[in-house]
Length: 163
Length: 399
Image (cartoon, rainbow over all chains, first blue to last red; front, side):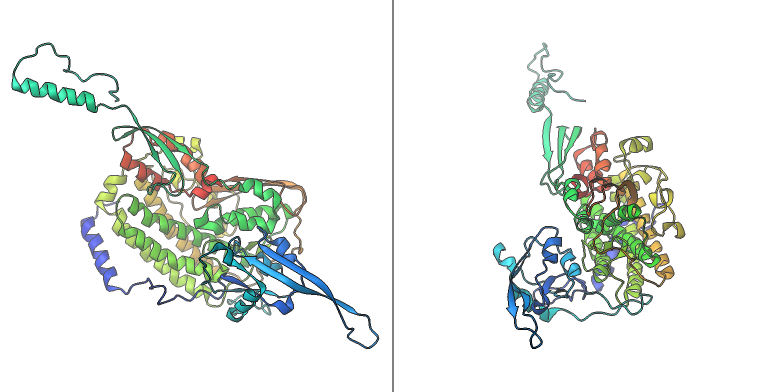
């Protein structure tokens, strides 16, 4: 490599001076916020009425941080003279965010579209135990789930983005 | 070199006169004996600002000079090779994200392609292209951090900020495509989790311009700087033969003049055979040449991404795979050129939903195995330069 004609100190000062004139790229966090990408894996939201207590998410979770409890209930038949239906009712659905690795396997394996990713990220707590979100709190995240975004040119037609 | 135990010359001189000059000389000799200390053992790490993470270096010092250095690893051992035996294949992909956390996507690719080889399936071309783009993006993100951090290690604070600033563009790209900035978990056996979001290709194109500009900045600011050259040239020279013998790989080996890149020389994988790229080498093998090679490779990666963006075909990103993936019995070895070097997985399957045994060959582990040899006889400030120049990730060493 050829030796530079200008001393490195001056080149460095020139770059610093140029950068000084540009606007800052940092944001002052609590006052200004950057908007995360719609796909960003921030927090998992639960749509409770879709959950059938199939336990697939709890079983597939790599560190088993999802706790589900449910019970069966008898419901009156849909038609006159039919059999009584038995449905699973969700008692408990907790995700321990102090253990969660944000891999998204639970969202992906859910066959009934009950789990969604939300890019929301501001839910830090002072006590680690409060990171255990129960089904009510997980349900509140549903409001922050963004709509499905369109895919890039060349993507397989007729396929919408997955949740 | 060491004068331990031997009294300084002149201290036992018999011709003792009242000459004041001689007195001074004698007093000086006495001080020399008192200051002559034994070797000092210095612990660099496990929690030391100059090491990257929890690497512990026990260096034996004679004054400022290192007599011997002993890297002690394992402070971050998480037992990934064992854990994989109790997890299913999709779960393993999540875990191996965390091996080299600066280029997580590049970690996933060899494991997923190992499973694909055993299952005898192949990801569709569009998925292969997206995988290549994201692998190269993670390489750029890793190297941009290195290019800034290397300046930091020799005492220049500013380049580190530029490195972090420009890496943000790449991380944002990875996040908008995969959902995770550091741990994408985007690869699935048989393809990818999802296609790219709308407008991603144009964004990637403009981000590549940022990378080229960043490389120019680093070339002027760091590589062309006289102080940086003085601190790095001739420091930590790895001879090519010794580097090969120790299993050093990746940019560290190419900086020693070995023209070996698995993207070009290994088993063809992803779409690298179709890309036009140059493998950069440098004959010197010192810290300066490692910086030079990584700088050029960053540019080369950005060029590769641009080529992929032009040539990306339309189509699906996922082949048909069963819902519950069971990999047929067999053994396979897949190695890829990761940002830090050669990374390989030896996967043994017995037909279950998870691997029977996985051996992970991570680049940093072999790269730092040369440290005891390399650090012999260097000065303490150069230890930091050499550590920074080798560029290892602790998670990649300890797994």
